Length: 148
Image (tube, rainbow, N blue to C red; front, side):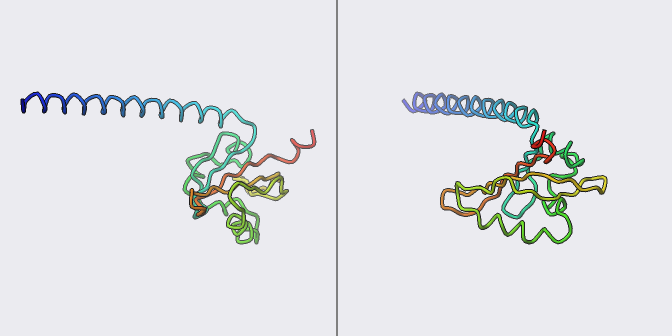
């Protein structure tokens, strides 16, 4: 009887493990699809953590700002700010209420080649279920695109 119980428990564990593996494969596949969607957009999409560090950087961000994802991820977002704008703009993140965003703010950002570019910037804060700030998403478009 004891062997039967152990066999049943083992089988149940194997089934749970297979379900977990299937869920992991499905999650990885969904991440791949979402990554392709983000990279196919014309707008620069930048994800930040609560410390203002870049955690995601799509292909349009590479084109707009001239930095590869490898160069940008892990950097403070302030490396894109023109002189003197950093502290004020980072402070805006904390003031954005959950579910709200700052839309189409025109601002200047630095490019990798040292030049600057005018962009239309939308910022949405990301909060956990308790309302604590966890990060932000930034969507940037060059202003010349808006006027075409």
